[in-house]
Length: 202
Length: 75
Image (cartoon, rainbow over all chains, first blue to last red; front, side, top):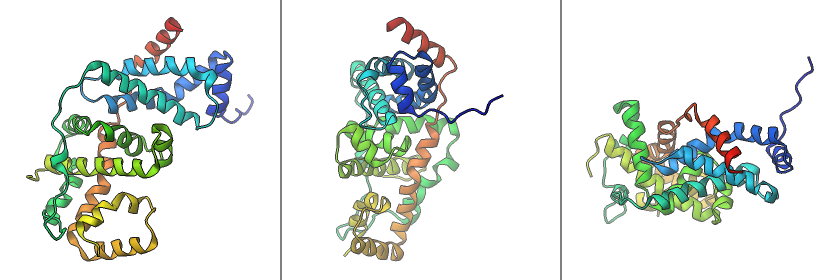
């Protein structure tokens, strides 16, 4: 038996798949289907259909492969298509008004000091001990859904999918500073939201 | 002077290492002396990981098959 060679890079597989090599496309599917599914699940929220969004996304990936020029990493290029497919589904599904998380932002007194006590401020970090896994899974998805649209994708890509700020900026067509700002606002809101789940009163 | 409020506004930049050395030192001095901010930073840092873990779903077993059928049908 021969020693297996190194795994071909995404970019190489993409070039082969674009030239009609079906096993190469199959390999890209295998590499990315689970990640694409998770990304759609997180972006779509409760009641979404991540499976359908992933299917739409991979159809587009296949169709657009010949135009992939390697200006971004293949993963970034693919994430952009998957993100857009999820956003399209959100749009077509119509908007369900959800209570905003604005009220979960930290509050300060006139001198700029936190109003909450250290114990209250730390409560969010304890939520995993207080809620069972299933409840936390539901509440987590609900919290992400309640983020303002402008923050949701940036937060999901940066903090949940763990892309770099530069990659998210490239993918979303934003400056890195704008990505940091959106992610920051989302973290502040979700931190407060987790604190409420852990019993902190507004 | 760094307050809790101004410190909070710089937290993402701080954690990503893009603050100037002066601003960073000022923020760290505030954090050392402020129990509230220390608690706040701990929960701010914990938030992404909690949500990441809570939403780390596996795709349904049927995904792979349905994906291939759809690609074959629609291309």
